[in-house]
Length: 492
Image (cartoon, rainbow, N blue to C red):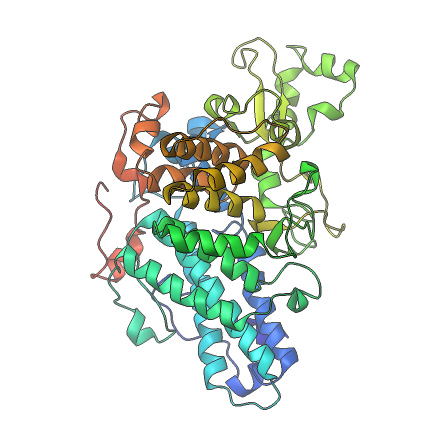
């Protein structure tokens, strides 16, 4: 089984420049039966979720939130990998943390391409037609999913659609519009090939189905400003009986939540995550303040004690004041998805209260314990906000307001007072900020696609002097050295 998984787990030699696998076995063997094909697919998702911090496993949320106005890095300048993101002071020639997004996304693209090619060439009659089709659809979906994050972090990127080294070694950057067109094609193909149910994941929502392809396609159309198609695709997901908003916000991120469209399942035997997620590690405290009794809370805030216990009580990354203040009074999302920990009024803490995301709750989870949550990759609430925005742009004020209200009412808030297009779009932006915070760099991408990034982020003191070019991450310098047709983003 390890040999089979290695077919898709084999690494990229240098990101886009990819040698043939050194540990390969014949196509007939690796893609010869249904069982072996499912093992290959398991390898694809294993690489996305179980091989450390990656674009598909924690890095997108963390790095995107620091680059935007969602998070503050508690380590400050001492955290040399991520502090440049917070301060808009990225040095492309230094050891840059977000290179991991480029490398991990292209590894997923390579694995997806390998599956597509091998299923096309395999003539084994021991693979059922339905599984051959669905796995091809899954691979096209994961390729589109990877390109969505690559192009939104880096802009124009090489469009790699083959594992042939001779064709990929010196690829130039493709225009972002071409990358989006490829995503649309891949997702349409995936829609036609994937089942509507969750049979591939044995009832769990851990392998993408037709609903996942439709949800991502709705998002892609939104980013392309194709409002009519964005509305249609989002409506298809919203109208699908497999998905529904949950009244209890504490259940949204649990395994098989009806709001989850696609989740990735972690291997609970691995460190450092265990049965938790990288979002636990990146955001939550090691000891939750609310779990302490009054006597312990008083003792921990003692100025003579706090320095020795602050490591356990402070999150590695916490919410900015701007995000904390964006929640309206009575918003149940703040109650369910935000936790706080105080500090004593002494130097260097100064009585600051640290608010941090609490969507993922297993911060102290240990290895080999059953997981309560998987990584939620796509969820239904986003589809309501996609449709609300598309409807506002199409002049359907009533339909847009109705979708906004579905999200607001679930959060315990009254109906929106917005009515005209400008007010509705502003209301949607606010709802996206507090509904989708600490998820998948939505805030950063929203600011960029709506043209408000420099206005909002350029006014933040810690990001001065503001460098708008850093809204795109630098292409890894090692790649530019190896491929003279790759050109660095402006400003680096």
